[in-house]
Image (cartoon, rainbow, N blue to C red; front, side, top):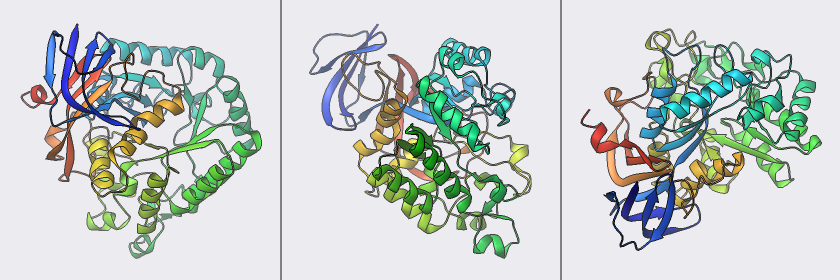
Length: 430
């Protein structure tokens, strides 16, 4: 089947051009002025065409907690948000720590056929931080990266072995940087507000100490490492210096770390939908994150999509679980709060949400619109504004602090390997 997208504005990380795109089956076969007929034509005049977005950090709760999210609903949420490739974290029940679970996730994603889902394998068995998983077997099963997400390895010797073995198999270690002995009883950033309400705080050094430890290890071993959801000014100072000194580090942040701050907890009566780990920071942290995105210290913008049930998020703030969903809003949040406010341009946003993740993870034929590449695309109307509304959320869980936000940039179509997996016009009528 041939699909012709006419008169769109194609945005790559390094160039913007006005051109048609001809898709045949799963690939882009021609870009330019195209006169030939196709089985289906889409008029993209006045809209931009982006390479399919790639999320390095998603929680799909499968297996074990399918009441919160499953592979189908997570895929639908991703497609609605313009994502065509997502990486699901292993903090499931049971953990994604063996060949069977990884192959099952990949096979189910292929059966569902909406987006590519790559499982992130656990570094240690059952994510207990005691015994390494079989890295070679996990790689053979289709794994590209490993993490014990949410449970950083406390045993530095074990982390050293993990980084060394990962290098042998060309696997990327994704590190959750947190010193649990400093943060384990906290619910929010240690601040004037935590003191005011008598809540146990999480000191910002809980993250930065973990960052420093992991980067010193990566420096010593001369290996690559990726740091997840970086949120504090001090962490970014450490990462910037390490990069300048040649440490092979990449890192990500999430939209809430350049939009929300600790004061938003008080303004929203400590609703648990604002509870996240790392916790929302101070104004100086928000500004540091934006500057680091602008300077390239932060390589990627991920969602850290974390579905929870209504019952869980109705618990008192200190008892509720951390995290909230983000797949459906991440692009619009980033476009609204970064591009519209001239922190970065649209090409820079494409780099953070598509090109760099593809490059870091070694995904060939993804992250860049060109002839011969997979037809993973998102058509976006940047002139449209829309309101985040709970009834429109397709994720199984609805826990987000962004309900009621007015955002710029509306996903009109998402293509996954040449197949239309999201069409706003059709979805809005359902």
